[in-house]
Length: 254
Ligand SMILES: C[S@@+](CC[C@H](N)C(=O)[O-])C[C@H]1O[C@@H](n2cnc3c(N)ncnc32)[C@H](O)[C@@H]1O
Image (tube, rainbow, N blue to C red; front, top):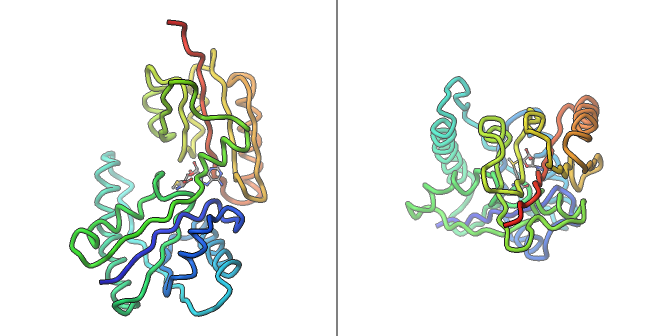
């Protein structure tokens, strides 16, 4: 049996790591990282820097795992992602079994926290359910928490619920009915532009915790253009940008 530690590493800054994450990083023999290209490879480089900064020895290795292609032509998005996760699981298991002795510990560094829009645990499911892998999870600071801290707000209001969704869903379905606080992630197309702005506040953050951190907040109708401009500026300088935002509506009196 091989043990895999899925370690949430926050936004790549060593100061975001919990003490438990540091201990987990130091326990790993081999880190497995997906090879995806472009922006993702920059994130792989950040992960290596993070290990160098906190582990303090060099008795660990990095092994890159080839990423099978995803079918982007289909409209059945969820099905395509599920099929892709299964294919990634097969490749990851084969790579782990080739590079890790039984009894050794594998590590996978999850950006932010592995509980939010991160496929690692799903990819490892087959290995776990067939008894080939023991999976452990160390939580990390998510971009969602970084967003709240940067704006000095609580994401939840008294007795209210919070929904976390994707830019794709927001673009297709609009703001979920009955939900007044919605965190939006994975939004490459700025879906907030298509939300009726009346009575909606936005708290937006890009590269949270990183060197290009930018935040903007205010009435959606008044600040949307400023957000688009900030986002475009970071993207043109860096080649990519990651952003997250909260949309907050007034709660009608009951
Ligand atoms: C694949 S998801 C991973 C989320 C991650 N597991 C987390 O806990 O933050 C990637 C999305 O997270 C958000 N994100 C990740 N890093 C970010 C950052 N530094 N600043 C703002 N948003 C970020 C963006 O919405 C991005 O599209």
